[in-house]
Image 1 (cartoon, one colour):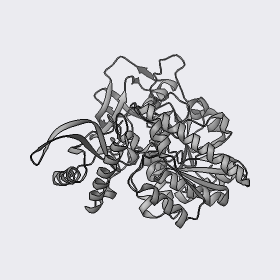
Image 2 (image 1 turned 30 degrees about the horizontal axis):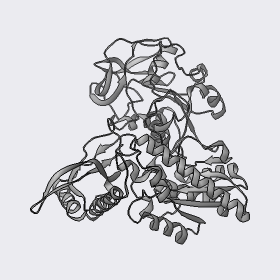
Image 3 (image 1 turned 30 degrees about the vertical axis):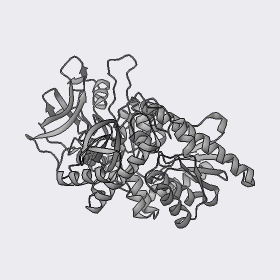
Image 4 (image 1 turned 45 degrees about the horizontal axis):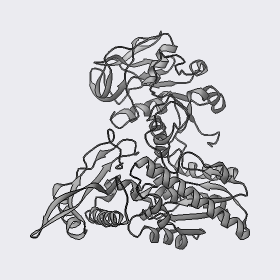
Length: 524
């Protein structure tokens, strides 16, 4: 997708859950990057001709049979190489060092002491000082490859950071790409800009132009159906695709009965009034809710909703064909990278599935349609930047994420219309107060959850036995990690009072203070 004029970084994926964060950090430097699985790295390296390579982390051990390794060509090409976590171990093993298991493992926050100055650390870390990092490893490097020196140590990883200035090979046992390593982005900046000498010529405008070109090439004269959910992702995807192919696009907005208060009206107004994009509004709430009766497993809910979405799109595709407009050959979705990495291994590597997503996993063969997913490699904040580049209203661009399965995954346990009505109103009050107090834009995502329990309460002189509402708000930059938002207790008390007084069926409100990890952002 990238033009040949762009400086490129190849990221070799060994199966880490956070590999895409590496790409994100590189993109923050306005440098184009691509992720490929280690099995395809040799071919990609030959075709891309990158000016630098980064080796990701991963769950494997270099001592395992058929352990994933980087192609020798990468080390022999004279380009800078940076290994992270498993990437360090693979580099050390391949270049003549020694990696051992059976020592103390190291997971979570740790400290690294800098023992040597290096171009990698220039202006960021100083020799003799200790700095916080995020570790996640069992094996560790115990003997340096020839030409390398130790740059940093930690209590459970004496060789925690290494470098060969001559060949411009560097590696860290800790994860530079995650927010829990506060200076990691700056170290990656040094590698990309100073050591590799790459210019920052890849911008969101460049992405937009190249994505439009890619869509046109993929679609040709074909017709596209785009599934709108009401969230930022599908809205941006729709506007981007419309800019690429115009009237060849028809948007389908499915009201599955699991939307927020007045959601349908807002979405329809935006696309019909502001963009003049052909829009089909399908109210299938009765079908969805009937299918979800008695389904309490969150995976079961997601799979049920995903199947019904496909059924609706298939029906609409047939209707377009009957109108004489020709059959729709493509289905467009606002799939993002966090959706993909939690559902399946993004690049075919050995990463672990966290949860399925209704818009991930392909289409049934009977549909005879291909997927168009122009945002598949982007994070939420990058999508927002793209939305602004496309001129979407800030009211849409700045909205908190909303899951495709909607309120189905915010009602743990069995779903009923009564529960959904209770949740909608509680959520509306919560978001209304967050906006009123000016906190909305400081929060990555905020929402209410209807818990599957009832508790005893007292209202006036009477006994109540009603539901509990859980409130959730987190800060994040990419959705892969998150911390709970530190509301003032006075604010939470005020919101709780409003919900209990105004929402019939609720007599208790709690606030969720779990970070991600170990929890997910949504309640499932």
